[in-house]
Length: 271
Image (tube, rainbow, N blue to C red; front, side, top):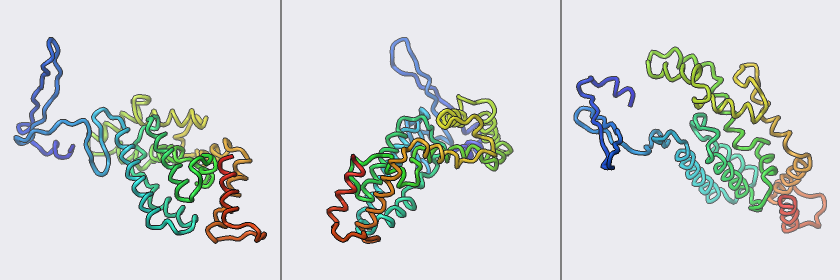
C-alpha cells in the first residue's frame, strides 16, 4: 500500500472529508481517491494471512490465528489420532506452533490468555489426558515453557535482532526509517516494542533484556522455578504411563492392564 502511494502522482491522490449527520457535531473521515477509485474505509482488513484492525488492536488477529490453530489440531487428531503420543506431540509442534508474525503482537492483549488456554486444551486432546489436567503438567510435557512465555521469547528475540534494527534504521524508505527510529529511540511505552520489553522486564525481573549478552534461555529457567518439584515428578510419571498405554514401553509388573494405567494417569493429572 505504501509503495503504491509513493508511485502515484499527487494529482491522482486526493482526500474528501465526510461529515456525519449528528446535530451540532461532525466527524472528519478522509476518503482516499487514487486514479478515480475510492479506497474503502473498513474497521479491519485481511493482509498476508493477518487481520489488521483500524484501532491497532491485535485481538482480531489473535482470535483469527486461534481459529486456524483449532482447525489444524482437529486435522491432526482426525488423520493421525491413532498414532502414539510421542508422534502426535511432534506433529503438534511441527505443524501447529508456527504462529507466524506473533512477534508483532501486543503481549498485554487479553486475547493472549485465551490463546494460551486453547493451546493447553489442544495438548490435552493430543495425548488423551483429562480435560481437567493440571496446566503445570501440560507445560512440563511441552518442554517446560508455557505458550505465553514462548511469545515473550519471540518478541524479545525480534526486538533484539541487530539485523532487523540496522536494516530498518538504515532503510532508504523514509516511512520505514522513521517508524523504526521513532519506536526504538522515542516511542518507548507508546511503542509496541517498548511496551513488550517493559512487560517482560517486570515478568522475569530482568532490567536489561535488550542487552545482546543476556540469554533468552534464562526465561525458560525462570519458568521452571515456578513449578513445584512434585509437579515435575508427576509429569515424568504421566509421560511414562502415556508411553505404556500406547505400547512404546511396558511395565515390569504384568498385573496392570490398560484401564489401570489410564486410571493412574487420571489421578496424577487431576488430583
